[in-house]
Amino acid sequence: MFLRSIRLKPISGSMPNYYPFTIPAIRNLKELSFHSDVTFFCGENGSGKSTLLEAIAFQCGFHTAGGSRHNRYEVHASNSDLGEHLQLSWLPRAQDGFFFRAESFYQFASHIDETDEDEYKSYGGKSLHQQSHGESFLSLFANRLNGKAIYLLDEPEAALSPQRQLALLRVIYDLTKEGGAQFIIATHSPILLGYPGASIRLFEEGEIVETEYENTEHYSLTKYFLQNRERLLAELFKEEE
Ligand SMILES: Nc1ncnc2c1ncn2[C@@H]1O[C@H](COP(=O)(O)OP(=O)(O)OP(=O)(O)O)[C@@H](O)[C@H]1O
Image (tube, rainbow, N blue to C red; front, side, top):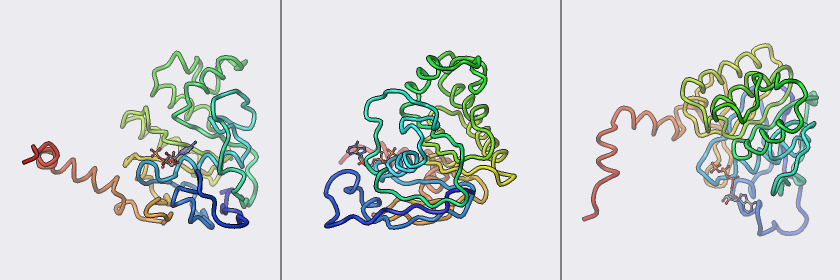
């Protein structure tokens, strides 16, 4: 592990009334500590997961649209509104790492096309644009992520089939089993959240709280859907009286 905790720096005067401080979980954030090689951020859409992950990436020196410290490319709105306000505590400081961001992956792939001089060795041997969406995600995870480093992944499951989500779990397992790598992952995937021993942080009701896998809605709703599909869909599609 590298990153031990993050803390919102004290803000002089009253709490600002603009983004990102309008997000309840961010507004109330004081300190968040990490105690597991794999930490998940989960919670409803718009609860602040990406905002916080992006701010951590900013403080790590990674490109906030995705990449490492070495990636420099222009992309619309690549700043981090929260980044400057966050303080990171390391032990030891990670020398390397990568920020994966599903929403700006296309721009990252174009940047690699323009700059790669290594026959795409870190990306499965061919342009990320010449692979399917899911193939390109997994190529990056399986090849670009390696060694002792901090990896920040924002919705890595976005293009992955269930089978490839399992493959990603294996990548995470291989990189963490010798205590070498640390992952912080924002996800909605009930498959990824099932990683053994992971710490799950739920963004809910203005707080970020630690919870168990079985207590997440991702787990319970998916389980209920699979076990009661017909009943649930009948209820969902019921005509208004
Ligand atoms: N650049 C921005 N300017 C203003 N508001 C923003 C900006 N980016 C995000 N927001 C708002 O901040 C809130 C949190 O967004 P964020 O992307 O962090 O959520 P999230 O938990 O990652 O959601 P999702 O699961 O849908 O990816 C949302 O209500 C969003 O509309």
